[in-house]
Length: 151
Image (tube, rainbow, N blue to C red; front, side, top):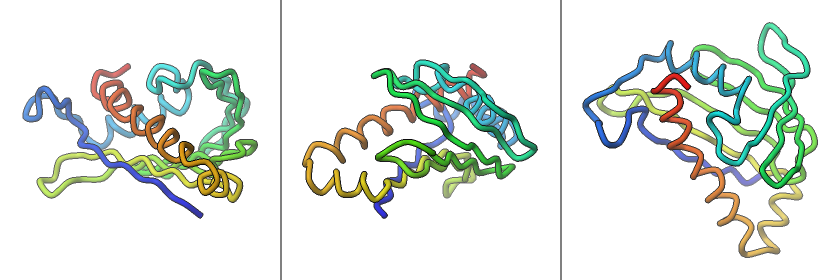
């Protein structure tokens, strides 16, 4: 399986020594993002929580292009959340993880694993991987801003 990963610091780039958040605040923001991702992720326009569980939820998200994807979101507090796609032909799983950098400041990692079909698509279509990489990497700063600003 092909996995793509990005890690960014969890502080606003324009004020790297200014606004800081702790891991508890980050976890709360991640849970809110799972329940209402359109406020954080530019390419998601809607979300319906279908079921809630002690360890997460089942949701249906709507992408900007109109596609709907069901995901089982598994909470692994206090630092990790896994989004298991049920009907996405290209994406098998997305992991969001809170970590720390070398200076002890919080970081946010987004890891994306492609399905077998998504991997084949990446081999056949030279624009697929750059497109999916750009789509997901472009969501990092809005997620960071939303978490820090308490969206």
